[in-house]
Image (cartoon, rainbow, N blue to C red; front, side, top):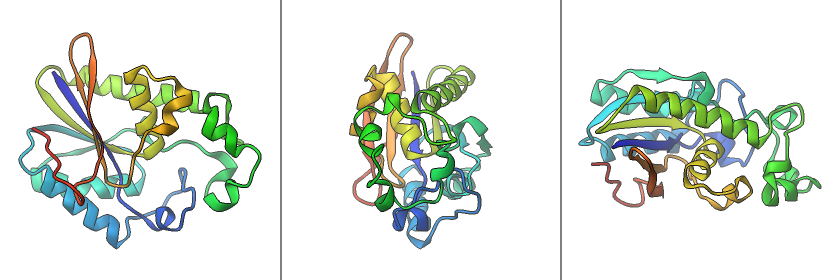
Length: 206
């Protein structure tokens, strides 16, 4: 069995202020996010982690850094794990975006939506699943791999591996610094944890 721990990055000021960060560079963890990264490290201190991967965006790498330092792991950044390309919506307020006519499409029929001058959810899901499959191919049986990246990509990956229609992926939760666990067997995948936050509850990863 190969286990993937899909971890969302910690809080940053874009999350706190409800703005859509997309792929903007220079977005760093805030004080709360750094606390969350330390809590993740404490929760996983005994876990038999084989490898650590992350999106190249700063907020993901900074979330992975304390764990990498304590466990002596290299952070392997993978470009395909980056956040969804939201095009010209990048940096905009969620409050403003919720007033647009297309918001209901994003919530109820995301398979039909493409971000203006960005990518579609279908493309994002294919990109993320391909990246995770490459990681799985590198790490065979009886390994535990941590992957730190972003909310919608994590939810899209979970929907794929559970066989959920893409239009239902918004029903899944993925809070900052949460852990989602997928156990891969030869012919199947099992979700054993979803949106588990070490600051709120014990996170087991053995």
